[in-house]
Length: 478
Ligand SMILES: Cc1ncc(COP(=O)(O)O)c(C=O)c1O
Image (cartoon, rainbow, N blue to C red; front, side, top):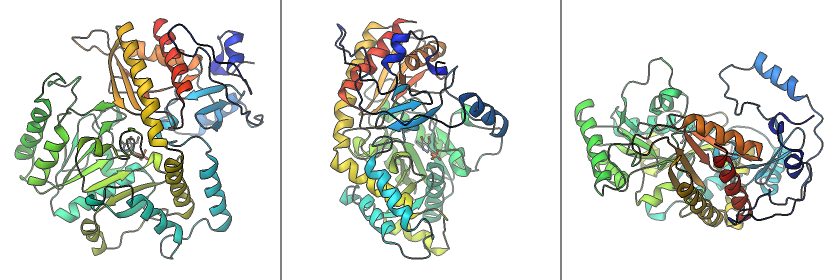
């Protein structure tokens, strides 16, 4: 029987991504590979519960709120580098990395070995005892920040939501102010403060939000009122931020948080100059500036290790998760020694924060990023993909915008370039077609009309060509 994900494909297409396939790359006239690049790895045969049983258990025992991608969902049971394998051994090029989390590749041997070695010696004690790996990893992480930033004190937690919750608390405790500002269209998590910072109606329940959190006009140079063609756009969006503080707060704020490229919001880049202006305004009103680097960190943007560095700003607090552990439940908040001191006025504790297994994995991730020149690869392969997507934009009117940096890319589909009517059903079609041809991408944006391209950063130039060819064919089938 064919896997749910490949039903309806021709047998040739199926075998081209099947078990241990070693198909030769052929190139189309456009220069894109028409078949998935060779990959010399065959996962062990899957012998666990069937697809149907797994689906049934999920439906019966897990929350109905779980989001399941694809009309015919896929069951992924193996991963290696930039590829995933379903229960029937069909190979997929993973262009979404477990939602921008598998930074250096699925089951990277260095990261896996670090986890196993640590697990064999000690899994958990909490930070009430000393353990070398936690401090060592903290030091390595601190060294990734520009020296002059003084960002060198690390708090380990377990998820991006927790990191953002902690950052808000820290900013309030440090400044003595309460009001806090985030951007509309931002996503910062699903718990406590972070759910309140999130400003996308699709992610918000009709329950009270944290008092004091306000959302300013998103500096979106594509959909917002001030476009990228306006050299003053960044300043104009910043004016709205100042206006919000003056009218909706006591004139002083605890802080401001922003992703340097909005991830779940549809890979939205902030208008030029906005972030610098915004940081000045926040500081002039007594607040701290927080960079949410959950998606943009660890070299993903290609040009710098941290996304905020691309905008010439220095935050007071940085939050990170996802790519930090290549899939380990690990996140962190990094700040200056002075701000960090605030939390020592009370006891602050996190049971799994600083878990030696997660920290060993995080430490190994940093080694791999350095040793395998992962950031450079994000830049080089990301540039090929972005150029190719811009070529496709010239060919297909439905592509409204191609944006992002490195391997943090997005494509917004619209029905009309003036009204920007979201082409959400078209996006869903391309998304499904790509999967049928063996490529998994993400979807996002408030209207569900953005394709998100954020693969494990070990993806190759050959993969990029194959991906572009699949995009071309998926768009052509609209
Ligand atoms: C930018 C950003 N911040 C925070 C979070 C929350 O992270 P987590 O899901 O680990 O709580 C996410 C999750 O997608 C995110 O994309």
